[in-house]
Image 1 (tube, helix red, strand yellow):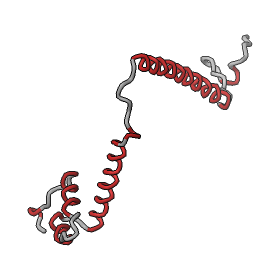
Image 2: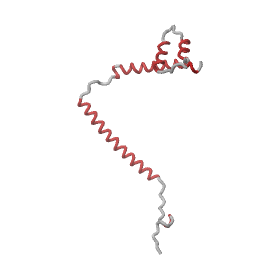
Image 3: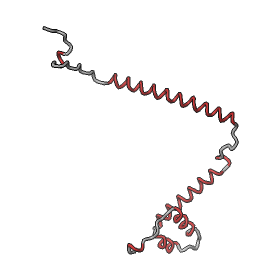
Image 4: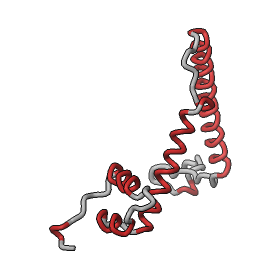
Length: 131
């Protein structure tokens, strides 16, 4: 294949088109694969994705996965209040955690050396002897 004869990019729509073209029992699989410029392994991967996506879509439409369509204003208010309370509690826990972390870091930190005064050394910084 020459560079000027590039195959079209395998977009999602083209992959679905390939999948549908190979569903027939008498479909010339080799010819279709050559036409699309893919290998059998590529087709098998596309088949897995299409079939698992179809199952996921069908499960979402089932009656078990449906969200309630009519929620009373009282229930909405109750849920909003719960959200506010939980958000506040989470913020308080975050502050407590940060303070606890800070305390732990300070307790495990090596003792700080005293700072030297101007013109002195760290060893004589604690002395207040003046002559």
